[in-house]
Image 1 (cartoon, helix red, strand yellow):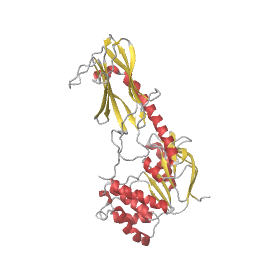
Image 2: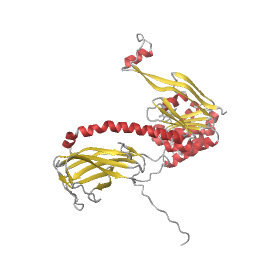
Image 3: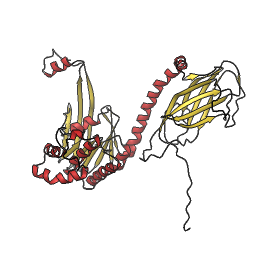
Image 4: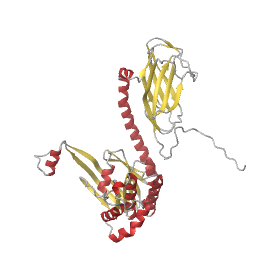
Length: 423
């Protein structure tokens, strides 16, 4: 059986919340009267347990505020658990926050020595590692400058170099996989891989899910202080993505009713306008089974549904749905008349669906405008007055690809490939 390098048993962390500084001071000096000197408590970690065998690389995922950093601070001894036990075997190096152990007034060289002492190295060991630390950070031209003059990237490069050059048995990293530019990030990535190949234990928290999938053999998912799932990266990532998607859907749904019930104020602001013979009463983004949805996977079918209500009968109106990138760039416009669709006479209520059976949209946020026109001359740039137009009031998101970190562009167009040997 593998020996556990990290063992966490029933760890909880509870913070006391105060409404005023005086209550905090009274509690600190034990001068409060009876129980309940603080107003309430916040549970940052709730009965978390797991073991990490020696020589494995494990990632921690979760939304901001989930408890990832709190857990890592406890593991590195920077914080104490309210309840539970933590055991780590071997020499530990951690990179939790920008420049841990760094003093802004000291030079990079001086901070290397101070950090080395902080990490338990002797002066002889620090002197032996100094050249490698500076070389890896590539800060030779700035190493004698005060670190307060460093950029964030320079700060983190030096911190990463110090933390990894001491050759620890256990390396703990919090949100620094993207240190510096792409070139230096690759160096960091390769160094972590070399740790893995040497049988070191690595525990890292990050929002870079693709990097975690590539590096880790196991993922821990923490949410609201609880360990939700512990398992193979792909399985955990799928469950995490589904949870995030559900939360985003709830957030979108909470916002949508305000748009519908506040149509009069939106008209006053010019976001809804038109002559009013027929009105758009509701707009929804639907998935392939007709359920409202605002988070879609790449290539997932998408339908924009426009409900309408006529004030007077209208004959063969033109329905339009336009998609924009979040920065306002027009992606496409679906125009019913251009697609040869006729509606004859509309009188009463109904809905019109614009179906994107296999959207070619790349990952990102998109904004939707919808409109109904009496007619639409495609050669007239000014256009006609609409019956009703809702200007960029709706939206949806295409989720990033889990297995690709490259920017594949706004349009994922299908292509064919042909190969021929010779001239």
